[in-house]
Image (cartoon, rainbow, N blue to C red; front, side, top):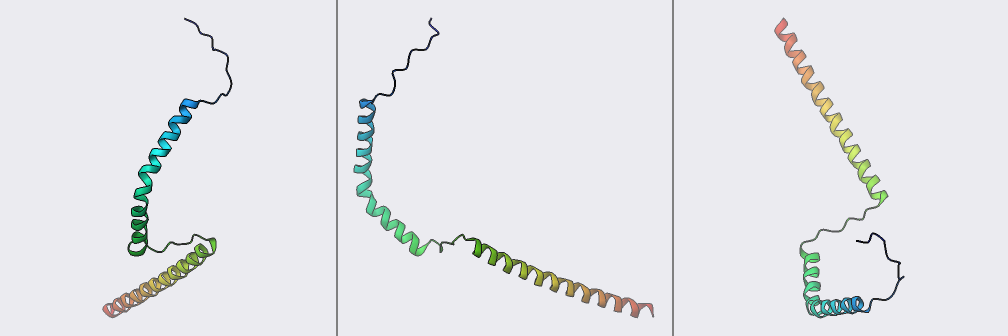
Length: 100
């Protein structure tokens, strides 16, 4: 058994593989072209009735959304703190009235 590697013959065109590639491409075109109008129609109907508006991913949009979210969370946390303070005040008032 030989363990040597043969010399490289270099790059040469492989006509058999090229022919098979062209045949497969031709078959795909023959199959896909008749189906293409149906695919386009389904895509248009999908875009009109089902798909949501595409959101544009931009830094400015992200920054504005983040600012809006942080402002709303600050408002919510301030409201929660106010409610907690009111509950504490009511509890203190109840404690004072029971101590008397």
